[in-house]
Structures are given as structure tokens and as C-alpha cells.
Length: 323
Image 1 (cartoon, rainbow, N blue to C red):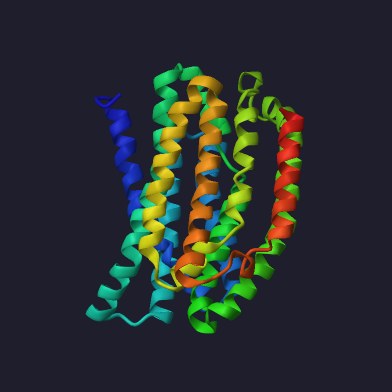
Image 2: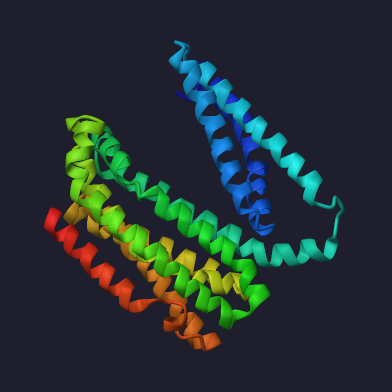
């Protein structure tokens, strides 16, 4: 495959997409920091609508993958142009060496933590490919997907609360985190439970009967809602304790990899999925304990524990029911 000119050509085309799409994420953060809520919603609809149309329209008109790739690149260029416009409107173009140093000191560990967290998916894929054939790998990849809205909304909420921690102070911010995270729990726990109950019916119809087993893996990944909707990392970032997040991300990756190797031999694909869930829960527990021991911040100050534990038991029972 590496010597196939067509494959290399598409790699080159996709690299242009990456070149323009990376800086374009600044647009979302600018609108978020400026508290342009309506603008952020409109931007999301327009940006992703353009991307969807740019990829799907060429295919609908009978063109091939090459034209769809060109559409993807074009959509990234449009988003890049929008980002430049927002920078002109809201940003001041100058190099501030003090800010750069402070930024790297705070953001550097977060970048490493993101890299470590993202590596887990590839390590899991490596383990699956080592122990199973290509068909089973495909089954795993189709199932190893957590409910995307949970991840997106949890990350958006966490990122949105970080500047408020600095502006309002930790005490007031903890109250907001507790109240708003409870709203997310009321929304996403029932949705996740609902998907868990119908996933085995949906997967064979959405794909084909060969991917029925993917639903079993997907149900385990739905359990990630338990860890996603707790936000000790938000307070840590607001307090600029980002090195802790980096170290714990490394711990999570190590636990994930070790447990995957251990559990895959006894439980197969489900074992690898459970390793991811266990490592993610451990990550949040360690961060919560660190906040308690080093900052004196009790988990109950920002964690609606009664509702969260109640929902966690219910989704656990739902998993047992469908298994």
C-alpha cells in the first residue's frame, strides 16, 4: 500500500485539509471566549454543513473519492477564511514573548496530555490487530465509539468553564460546575441508556449482520458517560495545574494498555473496551483525590454525587440487562 501512487496521492490531498483545518479551530474558541453563543451555534451549523455538503454532493452527483477529497479540502479553506476574518475582528496581531512563555508553561502539558489520551485508541487498535484477524478488527472499530454528543458537550462545557474559574474564582465556579454538570447528566445518562437498550437492534440494520457483535463493544463504550460528566480537570486547568493532568493522562494510558493486554486474553474485544472505561474512571478519581489532597477541594463541592452515582448504577444495570 505504501508504494501505491493513488494512496500516496490521497495522503497528499488530505495533508492540505489538515493544513487548513488545524488553525480553523481557533474560530470556535474565539467565539466561546467572547461569549458569542448564538454566533458559535451559527458557525457550527454553517461550518459543518459546508463540510458535509462539500463531501457528499460530489458523491451524490456520481463523482468518486478524489472529488470528495477536493470538497473536504475546499471546506477546510472556507473555515480557514472565516477564522482569519474573526482574527481581524477580535485579535491584535503582535508577538508577546511573556504571554508565549506563560502559554507554553500552561498549555504544553495539556498538549502532551492530549497526545497521550489520543494514543490510547491506536494502542487498542494495535492490540486488536495482534490478537485477531482483519474481520474482527473491523468489528471492533465499528463498535469502539462512545456516544459523540457526550464527548463533544463535555469538552465544550469544560473548555467554557475554564475562563470562568479565573474570572469568578474557584468557589463560585465549583457551584456552576456542579449545577451545569447535573443538567448534562439528566440529558445524557438517559440517552446513553436508551442507546444501550436498542444498539443490538440498530447495528445489524445500520450496517449489516456481520457487525452485530460491534453493538456489544459499543455498549461498553457507552459506559464512558460515567467518567465524562465529572469535571475535576476543569478546576485544575483554571488553577494552572496542568502538569498534574499530563501525569495522570500518562497513568491512564499505562493502565489502559496494561489492562487491555490482560483482559483481551480472557474476554476478547469486550475486555479491551472495559480497559478503556476503567482507565478513564481511574483518571477522574485520581484527579479528584489530587484536588482534595493538594488544594483542599472536596469532590462534593463540584460533583453532584448522589445523582451521578444513581445514574451510574442504573446504566450499569442496563448493561447487565442487555449483556
